[in-house]
Length: 94
Length: 261
Image 1 (cartoon, rainbow over the protein chains, first blue to last red):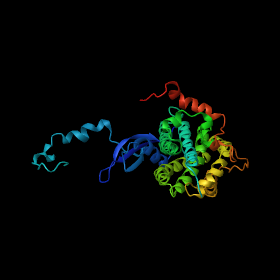
Image 2 (cartoon, one colour; image 1 turned 30 degrees about the horizontal axis):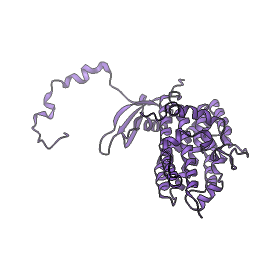
Image 3 (cartoon, rainbow over the protein chains, first blue to last red; image 1 turned 90 degrees about the vertical axis):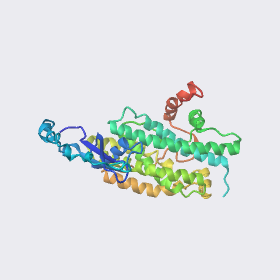
Image 4 (cartoon, helix red, strand yellow; image 1 turned 120 degrees about the vertical axis):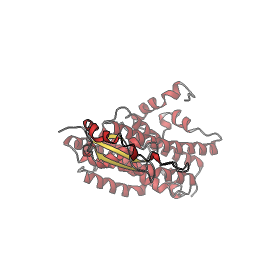
């Protein structure tokens, strides 16, 4: 058995209304300590209002080798972007 | 009940010095923590305490100016007083030891500190009440953290249990001073400027007992309490450890007086 603490991925929501964003990872013996450590490591400068922690081993990732089949097919489908529509200047964050 | 500024000054040194000395001890862990995350967390707690210490010492200096004509700044108080001038709790100056000792010291202190700060929020001295109200939020988190560690180490491996048990026993004799009120504190408490620490012992003990129980640790039962009379850290009578701590903490200002960033 490894003596290292398990790795956790940390997600912080910087303000209400925004989504949680991945900020990094850390080691912690359990979920409760993961939240506490995340608070101490990632919110020292008032970065967040909410923390999510997930065991790194629970994250399912796409394979780096599958890039061709997963992503390339969308390369030539520019019509899926909304950039063809003129946007009024007042709408800033779309 | 009457009290004078000199007494208030003396009491504020007790609060400020305990914070500053505790912060210095926690700072000693920087770069030596058992794991990066804990290294940062210890520093955070230390910085919280340092910030509170500054507020208490700054207020102390202002009070000093009222009865002495001139008052010292927070820096002068922290860096230019000798050991016998310090009024911190003996518990605060005890060496870090292993991680269990640091956490046991923190746990004993944090639980007491939170109780004290909550009580100080009701002070008739508005400034004390304001500083306490700000500090309560930080102390609440400190209690959660150190409690968590006592539980994990106590109810962890055989080795962590043994070390934690040794730590809570070794520091036990320094806990009595936290609840000892000398005439000065009794007078200030009667005037409702500060809390009567004697009243904090029961709730403190109840929390300590519960946590140690849950952590499968045995509550120490030693009766002898160091410095709980009228000759303890709060009166300027310290253990041998404070001098060494101050040597390091005060070095820069002693060697290069007035040095600034």
